[in-house]
Amino acid sequence: EIVLTQSPATLSLSPGERATLSCRASQSVSNYLAWYQQKPGQAPRLLIYDASNRATGMSARFSGSGSGTDFTLTISSLEPEDFAVYYCQQRGNWPQITFGQGTRLEIK
Amino acid sequence: EVQLVQSGAEVKKPGESLKISCKGSGYSFTTYWIGWVRQMPGKGLEWMGIIYPGDSDTRYSPSFQGQVTISADKSISTAHLQWSSLKASDTAMYYCVRYDSGTHAFDIWGQGTMVTVSS
Image (cartoon, rainbow over all chains, first blue to last red; front, side, top):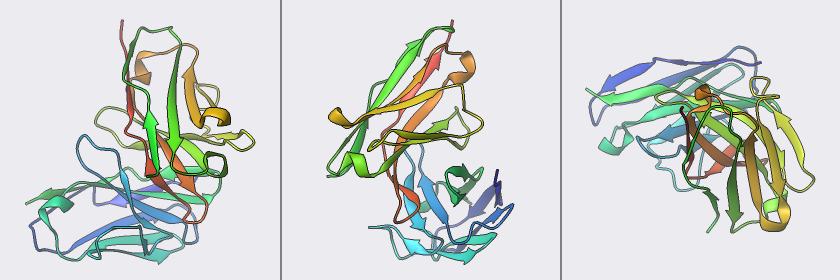
Protein backbone atom coordinates (compact mmCIF):
# COMPACT_ATOMS: atom_id res chain seq x y z
CA GLU A 1 0.00 0.00 0.00
CA ILE A 2 1.25 3.46 -0.89
CA VAL A 3 1.31 5.69 2.18
CA LEU A 4 0.83 9.43 1.82
CA THR A 5 2.32 11.63 4.54
CA GLN A 6 1.12 15.21 4.77
CA SER A 7 2.96 17.99 6.55
CA PRO A 8 2.52 19.95 8.60
CA ALA A 9 -0.41 18.45 10.51
CA THR A 10 -1.57 21.98 11.36
CA LEU A 11 -0.62 25.24 9.69
CA SER A 12 -1.45 28.56 11.38
CA LEU A 13 -1.42 31.57 9.06
CA SER A 14 -3.12 34.91 8.62
CA PRO A 15 -5.34 36.04 5.74
CA GLY A 16 -3.22 37.38 2.91
CA GLU A 17 -0.29 35.07 3.66
CA ARG A 18 0.95 32.29 1.40
CA ALA A 19 0.30 28.68 2.41
CA THR A 20 2.46 25.74 1.39
CA LEU A 21 1.22 22.22 2.14
CA SER A 22 3.24 19.09 1.48
CA CYS A 23 2.31 15.53 0.57
CA ARG A 24 4.94 12.80 0.31
CA ALA A 25 4.31 9.32 -1.11
CA SER A 26 6.08 6.18 0.08
CA GLN A 27 6.73 5.25 -3.56
CA SER A 28 6.24 6.94 -6.89
CA VAL A 29 2.67 7.75 -7.91
CA SER A 30 3.75 9.47 -11.14
CA ASN A 31 1.48 12.55 -11.32
CA TYR A 32 -1.65 10.72 -10.10
CA LEU A 33 -2.09 12.96 -7.10
CA ALA A 34 -5.17 14.98 -6.18
CA TRP A 35 -5.94 17.55 -3.48
CA TYR A 36 -9.25 18.09 -1.70
CA GLN A 37 -10.59 20.77 0.62
CA GLN A 38 -13.00 19.95 3.43
CA LYS A 39 -14.80 22.56 5.50
CA PRO A 40 -16.58 21.69 8.76
CA GLY A 41 -19.85 19.88 8.20
CA GLN A 42 -19.31 19.61 4.46
CA ALA A 43 -18.23 16.91 2.05
CA PRO A 44 -14.74 17.32 0.62
CA ARG A 45 -14.41 18.90 -2.81
CA LEU A 46 -11.80 18.38 -5.49
CA LEU A 47 -9.25 21.20 -5.84
CA ILE A 48 -6.40 19.84 -7.92
CA TYR A 49 -6.04 16.70 -10.05
CA ASP A 50 -3.06 15.08 -11.73
CA ALA A 51 -0.79 17.05 -9.40
CA SER A 52 -1.14 20.45 -11.05
CA ASN A 53 -4.51 20.86 -12.75
CA ARG A 54 -7.17 22.98 -11.08
CA ALA A 55 -10.62 21.43 -10.93
CA THR A 56 -13.49 23.24 -12.61
CA GLY A 57 -14.46 26.39 -10.77
CA MET A 58 -11.50 26.40 -8.37
CA SER A 59 -9.83 29.71 -7.66
CA ALA A 60 -6.51 30.52 -9.32
CA ARG A 61 -5.16 31.12 -5.78
CA PHE A 62 -4.76 27.35 -5.59
CA SER A 63 -1.90 25.66 -7.41
CA GLY A 64 -0.32 22.25 -7.26
CA SER A 65 3.09 20.96 -8.20
CA GLY A 66 5.29 17.90 -7.98
CA SER A 67 5.65 14.42 -9.41
CA GLY A 68 6.89 11.05 -8.29
CA THR A 69 6.89 11.16 -4.49
CA ASP A 70 6.86 14.85 -3.51
CA PHE A 71 3.93 17.17 -4.03
CA THR A 72 2.94 20.65 -2.92
CA LEU A 73 -0.33 22.55 -2.70
CA THR A 74 0.16 26.31 -2.63
CA ILE A 75 -2.46 28.92 -1.77
CA SER A 76 -1.05 32.20 -2.96
CA SER A 77 -2.88 34.67 -0.71
CA LEU A 78 -5.19 33.26 1.92
CA GLU A 79 -8.81 34.30 1.98
CA PRO A 80 -11.01 33.67 5.07
CA GLU A 81 -12.86 30.90 3.23
CA ASP A 82 -9.62 28.96 2.61
CA PHE A 83 -9.23 27.91 6.24
CA ALA A 84 -10.15 24.25 6.16
CA VAL A 85 -8.64 20.76 6.12
CA TYR A 86 -6.77 19.67 3.01
CA TYR A 87 -6.20 16.07 1.93
CA CYS A 88 -4.04 14.57 -0.78
CA GLN A 89 -5.03 11.33 -2.53
CA GLN A 90 -3.19 9.01 -4.91
CA ARG A 91 -4.19 6.40 -7.44
CA GLY A 92 -0.69 5.48 -8.50
CA ASN A 93 -1.28 1.77 -8.15
CA TRP A 94 -4.87 1.52 -9.32
CA PRO A 95 -7.18 0.43 -7.88
CA GLN A 96 -5.52 0.80 -4.49
CA ILE A 97 -6.34 4.39 -3.64
CA THR A 98 -5.13 6.10 -0.48
CA PHE A 99 -5.54 9.47 1.22
CA GLY A 100 -3.09 11.41 3.31
CA GLN A 101 -4.01 12.12 6.93
CA GLY A 102 -4.81 15.77 6.24
CA THR A 103 -3.42 19.22 7.02
CA ARG A 104 -5.55 21.60 9.06
CA LEU A 105 -5.12 25.20 7.91
CA GLU A 106 -6.19 27.49 10.71
CA ILE A 107 -6.36 31.23 11.23
CA LYS A 108 -3.47 32.60 13.25
CA GLU B 1 -26.58 19.03 -12.77
CA VAL B 2 -24.29 16.13 -11.99
CA GLN B 3 -24.91 14.90 -8.47
CA LEU B 4 -24.82 11.98 -6.09
CA VAL B 5 -27.61 11.88 -3.53
CA GLN B 6 -27.23 9.58 -0.57
CA SER B 7 -29.79 8.02 1.73
CA GLY B 8 -30.44 9.50 5.14
CA ALA B 9 -28.78 9.07 8.51
CA GLU B 10 -29.08 5.71 10.26
CA VAL B 11 -29.01 4.67 13.92
CA LYS B 12 -28.46 0.96 14.46
CA LYS B 13 -27.54 -1.51 17.16
CA PRO B 14 -24.43 -3.70 17.12
CA GLY B 15 -25.03 -6.88 15.16
CA GLU B 16 -27.70 -5.38 12.93
CA SER B 17 -27.42 -5.24 9.15
CA LEU B 18 -27.55 -2.10 7.05
CA LYS B 19 -27.57 -1.04 3.41
CA ILE B 20 -27.10 2.61 2.43
CA SER B 21 -27.55 4.02 -1.03
CA CYS B 22 -26.18 6.59 -3.45
CA LYS B 23 -28.14 7.69 -6.50
CA GLY B 24 -26.38 9.31 -9.43
CA SER B 25 -28.01 11.73 -11.81
CA GLY B 26 -27.05 14.13 -14.56
CA TYR B 27 -24.50 11.83 -16.18
CA SER B 28 -24.08 8.33 -17.59
CA PHE B 29 -24.07 6.26 -14.39
CA THR B 30 -22.67 3.14 -16.06
CA THR B 31 -19.49 4.78 -17.38
CA TYR B 32 -17.95 6.14 -14.17
CA TRP B 33 -16.59 4.23 -11.17
CA ILE B 34 -18.39 4.92 -7.88
CA GLY B 35 -16.38 4.69 -4.67
CA TRP B 36 -17.08 4.83 -0.95
CA VAL B 37 -15.07 6.82 1.58
CA ARG B 38 -15.30 6.55 5.36
CA GLN B 39 -14.70 9.41 7.78
CA MET B 40 -14.81 8.49 11.43
CA PRO B 41 -15.71 11.29 13.86
CA GLY B 42 -12.95 13.89 13.93
CA LYS B 43 -10.72 11.81 11.66
CA GLY B 44 -9.48 11.74 8.08
CA LEU B 45 -10.69 10.15 4.87
CA GLU B 46 -10.34 6.41 4.19
CA TRP B 47 -11.00 4.82 0.81
CA MET B 48 -13.12 1.69 1.20
CA GLY B 49 -13.70 0.37 -2.29
CA ILE B 50 -15.02 1.10 -5.74
CA ILE B 51 -17.43 -0.34 -8.29
CA TYR B 52 -17.94 0.09 -12.03
CA PRO B 53 -21.72 0.02 -12.48
CA GLY B 54 -21.42 -0.91 -16.14
CA ASP B 55 -20.24 -4.44 -15.34
CA SER B 56 -20.23 -4.48 -11.50
CA ASP B 57 -16.44 -4.89 -11.37
CA THR B 58 -15.70 -4.23 -7.69
CA ARG B 59 -12.42 -3.61 -5.86
CA TYR B 60 -11.87 -3.21 -2.13
CA SER B 61 -9.25 -1.64 0.07
CA PRO B 62 -7.49 -4.43 2.01
CA SER B 63 -8.67 -2.71 5.20
CA PHE B 64 -12.33 -3.18 4.23
CA GLN B 65 -12.27 -6.43 2.26
CA GLY B 66 -14.71 -8.84 3.90
CA GLN B 67 -16.09 -6.13 6.18
CA VAL B 68 -18.51 -4.50 3.75
CA THR B 69 -20.15 -5.23 0.40
CA ILE B 70 -20.38 -2.74 -2.44
CA SER B 71 -22.97 -3.23 -5.16
CA ALA B 72 -24.75 -1.27 -7.86
CA ASP B 73 -28.09 -1.42 -9.65
CA LYS B 74 -27.58 0.30 -12.96
CA SER B 75 -31.29 0.15 -13.78
CA ILE B 76 -31.91 2.78 -11.09
CA SER B 77 -28.47 4.46 -11.19
CA THR B 78 -27.83 3.56 -7.57
CA ALA B 79 -24.84 2.19 -5.70
CA HIS B 80 -25.00 0.56 -2.29
CA LEU B 81 -22.77 -0.06 0.68
CA GLN B 82 -23.85 -2.76 3.09
CA TRP B 83 -22.90 -4.41 6.34
CA SER B 84 -24.13 -7.79 7.56
CA SER B 85 -23.26 -7.22 11.21
CA LEU B 86 -22.49 -3.72 12.39
CA LYS B 87 -20.00 -2.85 15.12
CA ALA B 88 -19.71 0.29 17.21
CA SER B 89 -16.49 1.04 15.33
CA ASP B 90 -18.54 1.39 12.10
CA THR B 91 -19.89 4.69 13.45
CA ALA B 92 -18.83 7.22 10.83
CA MET B 93 -19.84 9.44 7.95
CA TYR B 94 -19.84 7.57 4.66
CA TYR B 95 -19.44 9.40 1.36
CA CYS B 96 -20.07 8.03 -2.09
CA VAL B 97 -17.84 9.54 -4.73
CA ARG B 98 -17.62 9.52 -8.50
CA TYR B 99 -14.21 8.61 -9.85
CA ASP B 100 -13.27 10.28 -13.12
CA SER B 101 -10.79 8.10 -15.03
CA GLY B 102 -9.75 11.15 -17.04
CA THR B 103 -8.67 13.21 -14.03
CA HIS B 104 -7.81 10.20 -11.81
CA ALA B 105 -9.71 11.85 -8.97
CA PHE B 106 -13.02 11.89 -7.13
CA ASP B 107 -14.74 14.79 -8.85
CA ILE B 108 -18.26 14.49 -7.42
CA TRP B 109 -19.09 13.75 -3.78
CA GLY B 110 -22.38 12.77 -2.21
CA GLN B 111 -23.59 14.72 0.81
CA GLY B 112 -22.67 11.87 3.14
CA THR B 113 -24.65 9.38 5.22
CA MET B 114 -24.03 9.36 8.97
CA VAL B 115 -24.18 5.87 10.45
CA THR B 116 -24.34 5.58 14.23
CA VAL B 117 -24.00 2.16 15.84
CA SER B 118 -24.83 2.11 19.53
CA SER B 119 -26.46 -0.22 21.98
